[in-house]
Length: 336
Ligand SMILES: [Zn+2]
Image (tube, rainbow, N blue to C red; front, side, top):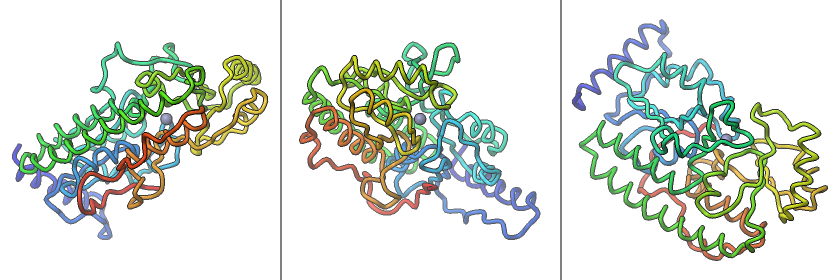
């Protein structure tokens, strides 16, 4: 399909959408000649924004600060999806309800790219407390390893180049800059983690999103508090976790703003650890336009919170540039 065909199909789809909706206040976007890309969670939106820059239109769907695992898209999302040339999601069973909506509403010829399903093989899937093998759904948080986030970026770059070859040089340049940043960040994180006393290189989180991070940097995930059904853990489970925190002697355990949990405070207090409730996995710091409101900013902020709490230093991260890799305003949409 040529670029003109894509535009023609997109235009016809838009016209059909207006005709079908039967009202005139339909806010179908003016044709811009840019690829329309719909994304799900904000780290993925940021990766796509970094590569596509100002040459694509990006529309994130999952609002920041909501539980992406149980996120149910509003009916209005169907229309946004129907206008997309490309739908990018994590996959690995993370956005099941969105995926269902996307597959019923996508326009003919639209591409669905599930990054997690392509970035690792089944042999590399991780099952754990919150994502038990018995449920068959592996831990989907691949992007907390910057190296896997780079793999996501590569898949996005390849897809954008294939859909819009006229902007291939631009997408490739953005990818190359993003790769340099990821390589830089990866090296700096490794140095920072080395400053944590070896006996403290252990992570207990509420939401179970750091297994791939742990694997990359030699941090043992000693547990996650949130059960697979996203309820609060049972009293017995809490007692077990308190014992574990005591036994492992970790100086801090970590929660997130997305999943406030009073139980975490109890586990920390009775286990003799500090409770830090600011780790994030799919809620970028600040808002669109803020310098840290990027995938790189998300990881930088996590490390700056985690490493000192475990007794290490983040000096190695000084001067890291977490900003977007391209010039100009992409107009990417990050619902809050
Ligand atoms: Zn998550």
